[in-house]
Image 1: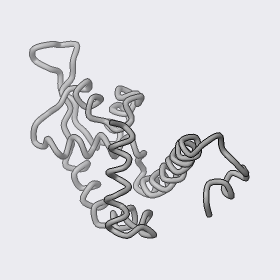
Image 2 (image 1 turned 135 degrees about the horizontal axis):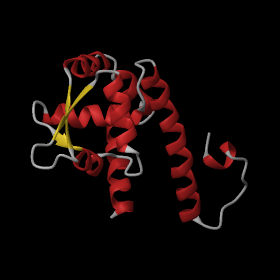
Image 3 (image 1 turned 60 degrees about the horizontal axis):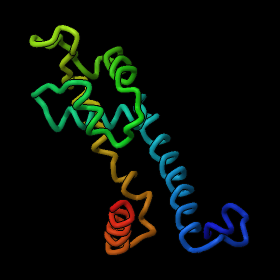
Length: 149
């Protein structure tokens, strides 16, 4: 179904407005698919993003500000997300020796295990866009990069 049918709008000011609205609408659709997928593991998309960042640095630690700078959602409340991951024993937090007010964060063995479990089911995430060919998905990614450029 095209965007005009989805939102019951017969016309747009121009193609740029239609593309922008379509992008926003599609973002919401895609975000809901990801939210549903990660909820079965008891985490949010943002928590998954943090765990993935930490796995990429494992066994090294990162500061909260470094994690925030690498996140897809720059508006996330990283402190709150880290507290929730800590309560679930998915990360470890230690006081920074150089700055007692700062903390160093690393992924725990339990966090690594959760990500391994999620990794076995990520085909579901890839299949969200499987109505596109590989070439179309590559082209879409390039166009999105160009739009931000």
